[in-house]
Image (tube, rainbow, N blue to C red; front, side, top):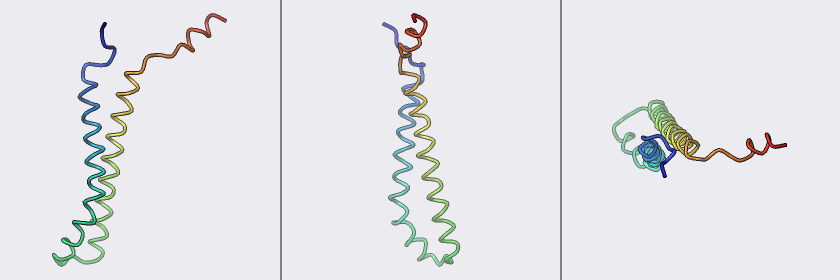
Length: 89
């Protein structure tokens, strides 16, 4: 029995999960890094900009990983029988 999934779908699924996990890790890491950046003498506006950039990066990582996961899972699902039954009626 042959698999109907594309040959690199498993790799893309693993890559998507990795992207989502790294994106989540960015959200947990931001509160730990920001005090260290404040000790370096950065201004308040710079710290706000850096914080916003980190959050955007986390959102993009999670979104990109989720897109890869969803695309791969949609490729693996078999077609439904609803199309076949419509022709019988």
